[in-house]
Image (cartoon, rainbow, N blue to C red; front, side, top):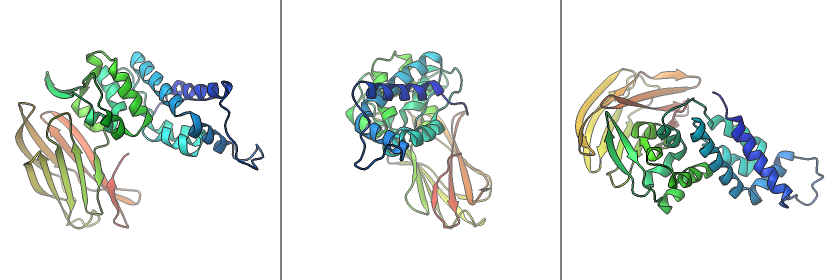
Length: 299
C-alpha cells in the first residue's frame, strides 16, 4: 500500500505553523523537556490542533480529488489527538490509500464513511447499469454527529461546494467503504445501511454454534424496511448461495448471498459472504477467535 506522504507532511507543517504563531505545546509541571517527546506533541494537538487538523484534512481532500488520489483516514487522526503525533502518524498511514486515478465519485466516497448515511437531501438513482447516491448540497447536522471523525467532517464540508458529478457516489463503493457492520455478541452480527429517505436495509447473521464447528450453520436474514427479502440457513464450512428479487429505487434487483468456506487465518476462523445486486458484488467477512469472540474481519 502506497502512502500519501505529502498529506502527512501537510498536517505536520500546519501543526508547526501554529507553534510559530504563538500556540506552544503545553508542558506539565516537572517535565524536564527531554522525556516523552511524543506526549508533548500529543498535548499540542489536544489543546489547539483540532481546527488545524480539520483544515489540513480539507486541503488534503481537495488536493486528492484534483490529483486523482483516494484518501481514507479511519482512526489515525483520533490516535494522533489522544496519544501523540508520532503514534498518530503511524496509525494514520494504515488508513491512507493511493490507488491511482478513478472516477471522482469513488475518491469522495471513501472519505465519507458513516457520515454519508445521513447526508441531507440524498437520493439513489440508476446511472446506466449501476445505482449511485446523489448527495444534496445541504449537509444535515446529524451527519457530522454521526461521522465522529475529523476527516469525515472535512469531507462533508468539502462536498458543499462540489460539482454535481463530485457528489455522485457509486452505491457499491459506498457500502464497501462505509462502517455499516458490527457484532452485538458472540453469535449475532449485522450489516445495515440507511440512505436518505429510503427504508433501512439489513443483513442479519446469527451463528448457531461456532465457526470452529464445521457442522454448524449460520442463519442469514436480509430485510428491506419491514420486508424480509431473503432468509435461509447457510452451512459454516460449505459454499452455498441463495437468490431472490425485490424492487429498489423503482427498479427490480436480483439479490444474492453466497457464503464461502471458513478459512483459518492465524488464530481465528474467518467466514465471508458475498452479497450481489445484479452484477455488482460486495464482500463482508467476520471472524471468531478461540475465546468465541465474534467481530467483523478486515484484512
